[in-house]
Amino acid sequence: MEIGERSARPLPGRGSQPQDAWFASLRPGVLHEFGRVLLAASALHADYSTQSGHECSAKFSELRERFAAFGQAHVFRFWEALGSSSRARLAAQAAGLDLAALAAADQATRALAAPGARRLEPAPIERLPGHGGDPKLALAATVRGEEILAAGRVAALVVAGGQGTRLGFDGPKGAFPLGPLTNRTLFEQQAQRIQGLRRRYGRSLPWYIMTSEATDAQTRALFRSHAFFGLPEGEVYFFQQQMIPAFDFEGRLILDQPDHIFESPNGHGGSLTGLATSGALDDMERRGVGSIYYYQVDNPLGRICDPVYLGFHAAAGADMSCKVIAKLDPLEKMGVIARLDGRVGVVEYTELDDAHRYARDPNGELVYWAGNIAIHVIEVAFARRAALNADRILPYHASAKKIPTVDDNGRTMLPSAPNGRKLERFVFDALTSAREVMVLETRRGEDYSPIKNANGADSPQTARRDLMAVYRRWLEEAGVEGFDAATAIEINHAVFDGPDDLRASRIRRVAEAGDAIRIAPGVAE
Image 1 (tube, helix red, strand yellow):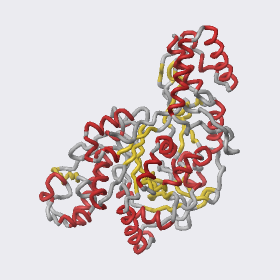
Image 2 (cartoon, rainbow, N blue to C red; image 1 turned 90 degrees about the vertical axis):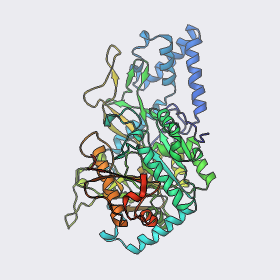
Image 3 (tube, rainbow, N blue to C red; image 1 turned 60 degrees about the horizontal axis):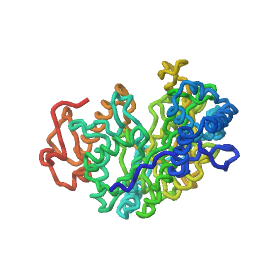
Image 4 (spheres, helix red, strand yellow; image 1 turned 135 degrees about the horizontal axis):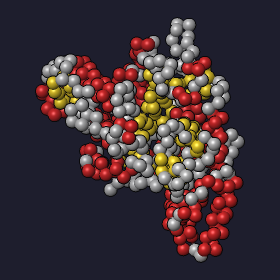
């Protein structure tokens, strides 16, 4: 049985009392239990479906007046043309929104994006040994990280709410086939890595998977159909991120159907609130887990539960840590690590002004060179504190997007240009509230090759190329022969997850590994 039953989402914006002056009234109810919200929505549906015309009209008039007071009367512009079930659907959704909180969130995103809103300075970073870092410190960190893994005090958390639409793939991005030779999915490759860690350290390593409303059912079905990729069912925990409406550029809610307000996932920062509302943090504590290894599903190169990273995090006594790589150029679309008003954090690339984006030191190097690659270590206790204080620690950000809307005749259409602003929480915002933060530099070719586009840069083709380059280095470092520069390679991470595993196996040629190492002539795309 799956211990991580679906955490169905609260209706966004369902409010509670404000806790922070900056975000007055900004508490969209992300910590309300789903059951209460579901019952409330069901009751509203029943009200509009079964009450007398007079009672229904009175309730609707009150709801309509409330929306009008916030400049949102257009939400009901198709009301007269809707049938009873469509009216009930729209009324239930609308009644579940805290308009004051949503308006405050929208205004707060505008203030956050204002240039000069925060003072930026370079942040301290633990550099690679080849870039000035101390090899002895790295070795000591590796030993400490391995001790933490061997004690069973780490859990893996993957953010997997995205769909493969931009890749031309119909399904969850984690189900995308990326294996260079076997079409192994991203989820399967990551399951192999976790199997390898369980084998190496002799302890369980629970895997928490954040889905979305769009990917939850398909993700669960994929895992069931593949027997959880060889992992114990009881150590795979699914939970859903929550949803929030979007605004057009005039601050109005957007209808994507005549009887429905558009909603989208609340961002990767929703992982921390989702861990709390789903009971996942409680589950971690019952298992004795102290540290969460956070990563995103679309980065096949990212090492899971990297011991040197865990060791540096522990040595620093950090609440939260961040892995970074050197940006290719000032315009690369990556958030950068910096001190924000004296606190270490990440500035998203859309919110970095040109003065800081292009700043260089006396040696001609970028001052803000350290790009965030969305691999974090987060203490369980800190994740709980961030979730309980989400309005202050995880503020909403907005980005211009092409959002489905309806025309004057109620027909759904996708605009050709951005027509609104989606709101999202960013997990890295929690860094500025951490008591201690550790930032570790890593190599792009070892830890980062994301799949963002169907072709070109950051595509499946480049990710496969980079993954095979990693496999080739492992074999060369371990002295394994039987391949050349034109050979396509795929390694099963459950068996070999690095050159140390290969050396320990004492194999001398690829053919001795059986199906654990697959090769074929020619280099796969």
